[in-house]
Length: 299
Image (cartoon, rainbow, N blue to C red):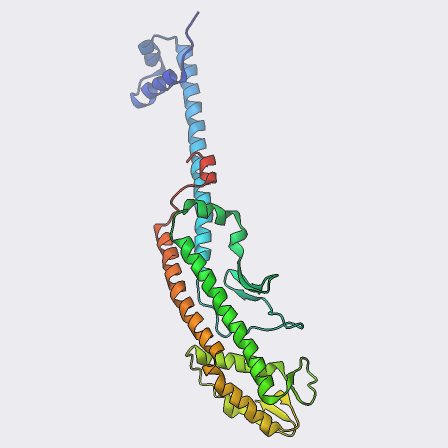
């Protein structure tokens, strides 16, 4: 009974044929096998090598695709780690709840417990979980947690400040806010709150855009206006105008305004630190470590 020839032996024949430039006949003579056996062995070894190369290329492509998806998520992080636009205005819905506001890579909203939270869209994706496995011990995650806390802290301060504008205006003027276009007598327009909010936030954060709101607020007949836009309808518009300006000028020194300035300063610092962590990872051009997908690919 003839001995079965192993694939390892056939690979040696292929090496003789390709690397040592031996002919099929010469290989057969050298190994003491008939020509047909050697020819079949050479073909089998060549086919197996081609299959192995194809599988290796597929694995390499799969790993590159996996790495690419992970790098996309890190790039998304970099794009997310920016300071929020100070011109964005927080608003209330019909029942006085904060309207969710979009930020790069996520959404600022109030949850069921009425707490302000940051929803990061990528956290819901598989690649975020796999990236955490790759970078399990990386400082990045701690800095991202700090950044998320700083973001929610800043927007909470903004929301409290916005509510304080409403409370201060109603207390000073004795008038209530009224939604809608047909403003009744002795009511304030939501436009007033938006206007004062935007101007004061920029002042608090040291952004000098040349706006002099006090000089552009006027009183005539039964209205207080800003560049033609009605801010209040009242029986004593001149008095109401002065009261509105008093609130406007006093707001930057209020505790709620100081909290906005403080939380924004903290956010600036933490954003810079977190962004540096992300930039370091991006500079490598690849994600170190392993995850369960890597294990499936035999890495």
